[in-house]
Image (tube, rainbow, N blue to C red; front, side, top):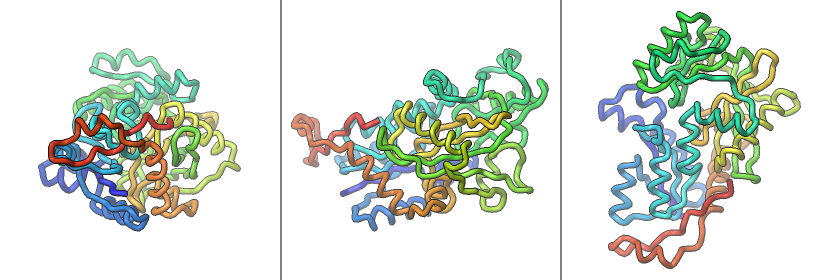
Length: 352
């Protein structure tokens, strides 16, 4: 299969003048090389495309692919993770991972929690602080946890994220509002174990591949899996494989799989949970566009721990996405590029 690769390369954005924090979610060259190597070893042809603007130029030039392996995060807007899938939908080209609806929803942590809550799944109580005046409206018991509404990779999460007084709440919210120029999500702080569950597949075919517990070391920032703890995870964090024989882990995996199916996530990803004071796991975030660095990203780390090789993980993701490839609709030929490139299979609605 001829597979295009869409991604946001951190080096590209650093060269454009963006800083380390702004590019924290983007991929290293080594991730793209690992992904491309795995796809080729699986027998596929690969074509590096790059970010959404590069994809737009390639599509306008008439290029097409049987499947696009998409890990592009995007730079601007609440729908930035949905930009590549939306563009590929317009050209009827199937792609890995979730559709624009899911990727827009899950980037907005507040909206995601409303959907989870409506689905009967446990998630901490929360309040959204859009402007400084909203801070006085927060009516939740301390301690609380503050983070940007629409960031990943722990951006904006540090030693000051756990707040215990109104003064700390105000200081942290005002700093996050000024730094990230987006609302702040204020949640009830969960003091218990932190678990990350990996899932591969779509809909009823989705399966939990494993769960790890995040153990912060003595030199780590306390209280949370912060940006610094994630960036320096090899030095500051211990990942411990835990199994469903542990009733807390079993509950976490059941909750994760239910959330994955409820939101319609596809192909692969991970979910982050933390236990409340009574030891009950609650959902913090869904990551349907999870990192795929073979040694540094949580989903491959989980797979490595359970004995699932990186190549097999990538193969399972491709196999899941390939189920959405449908026969070419005759009318697609009429809207194809003038350069004579054949119309490609239509992306289906997916099995989610």
